[in-house]
Image 1: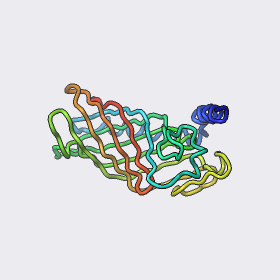
Image 2 (image 1 turned 180 degrees about the horizontal axis):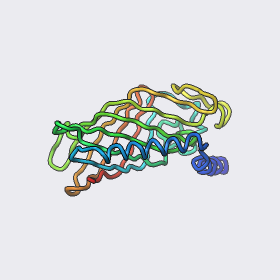
Image 3 (image 1 turned 30 degrees about the vertical axis):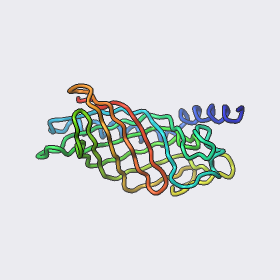
Length: 212
């Protein structure tokens, strides 16, 4: 119990201790993308804020499980990842149903290392719609960065697919979201999102989406 408590305390300190060379470029990218979308002449804008989240590993991570202090089962198949995800949707001109979505997330990864990712995609919010419930999805590209598990985490922990670059691990590639939403009123929805990081994991987050 003391070990897990110490790991959680370290995670909180880590999240507030991101190097300035990582923190400030991330904030700049967020502000720039929001400003560009706000200046768009497109008729509709939406802002979503989601609380992160739950990771479901699809591969065996039993060897790493002891180093996941927020795991929900002994094997580490389910891990809680605290953080915040913000996305901005802008409807595309001359389309009835397509949006340009920018995504920004700051969170603690499975080993409680501070991490962030940014992504951009074309998003269709209403692939299926039944009453006040809809299911949509999008596809684009994303970039993820976290502290190197070999450098900052407990000895013996192993990462799976991220590239090691000094004190950090990164990955750049396709990004996808599947979104289910429930309409609350004309300007507000409750949304739940699934991010398939195949073949390694599936990530879940939930929050609200507001018309601007």
